Image 1 (cartoon, rainbow, N blue to C red):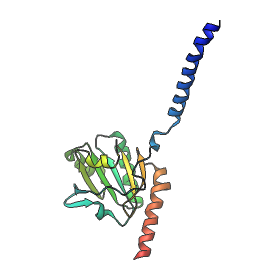
Image 2: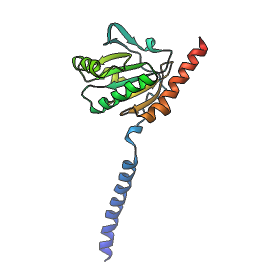
Image 3: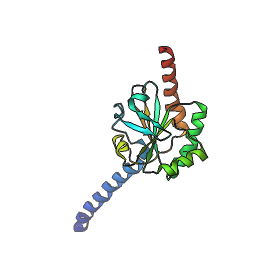
Image 4: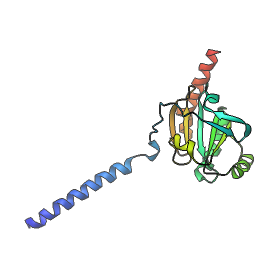
Length: 184
């Protein structure tokens, strides 16, 4: 009897340990992954604006107001859902939104924007993924909230929801607009 008990103790310990690890892992929210760029300056960049090919989008050109960088792709089902939300938010409170194409083709994206509407102020292509890697992005959709000085304030993984918009993004956009109005 004692031999059986000695054999069961390690097995019971392993099962208990694995159960604890699984409980912790399953209780975590995968959309709450912190970005290493939070409170850090956005990397310096210069990219051609796909919507206005004679213009470049740079970090310096975006300074002065709070804005969003949205990494997306035409093949991404979640991005299609988010696209509708972004159009709705632009109608509610127009804001600067920079789209970054992730592993996509401009020839597929432009007709989609013509047919479904374009929420983007600027759109840049990142065919090799160099810029998205610098941003710490690993999938679509992902969105970064950038302050007026070019620092990353917040990272959203997945579709921007009404909760994200109303409770986090819109207050920051309005605060930035009020601050800029006072400075004029």
